Length: 196
Image (cartoon, rainbow, N blue to C red; front, side, top):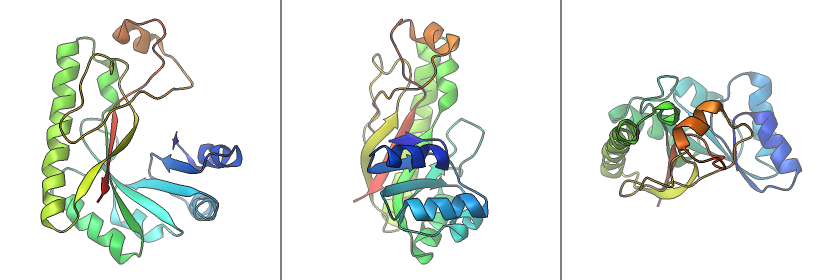
């Protein structure tokens, strides 16, 4: 189950969900302590985009490196910096669980051509980074994606990626406008990749 913050992950685990991903970076001592405690009750994943955050993590965590693929909010630039961060994750005695590539801006693109081009560029960044990781001894394979674009029913995932729709608590006017489907309740594009 994909969650945006620790409190949501705690609620999901309390409700019986055994596998959660906090698909954001978690900072702050109290939140990090809660995340570590939660990892003793369920399988917990978290995203990182810098070495300082990796050094602060504790617990039995799956750690995903978030790639910057067009969201312009957080994430590591695709390339060698990801290999360096994956090495730091292992040195911190955490599990490198793979990559997260999130291009949430794609859901706001009006034309399918524009959206397809954005996602294709993101997928190319992911493939390039996967090759660098494999060369450094970090082979990655696709794992089930945590979310997908409002028009995932019209698009195909790039080779080596998986996309799947996921429910979202809100359904914005933009989502309805860009999807063209009244019952579409899915959000943004997220692909996850895990080590072999």
